[in-house]
Image (cartoon, rainbow, N blue to C red; front, side):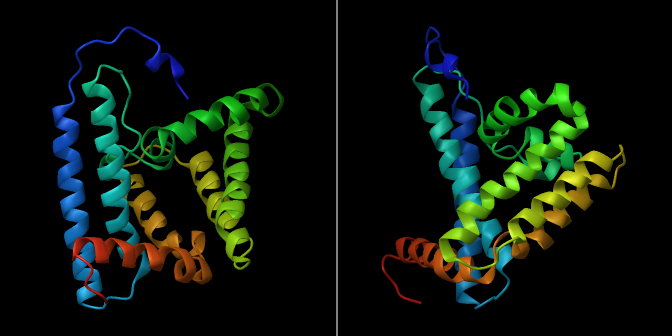
Length: 209
């Protein structure tokens, strides 16, 4: 969403810290996912967290390091969620920043004059709910309305939150509890579990579980 990063003059940029963070995230996620499968745990949010550590905070962070190594001033897409200050900070400054920027440009900015700042922000979450319906429930034809409900709750939380020390924990807890709502059982069975198996077979050199 920021094409100027690829058109400006290349320059020396710090990238090694991104590699260290990425490798640490991949290793920690791989260990966690291995334990999850080996011990036969059955709690989807936990497996999602491990996979997210490997991909969102590992593989994509390596991609950031690669671009910065060759001189393009790209920024991290996924930033440490554990230090978030609340719902607005998480969705606006920590999770999938490219998507956040796209929604700000395509939805929030055009609607601000008509709906006001809060109304435009809420519209972003409603549109996100619809997009995730297409990406999650439509492809498995089950669980319709659940992703929309997840983003509806998150949008309301963003609008009503006030500064408080406990918002960090409320936000993270809502995300963990809400994952089974965002991802219905059919999506977990048909999409996520095969991905888990792929990762485990890759990590353990073809060993079947």
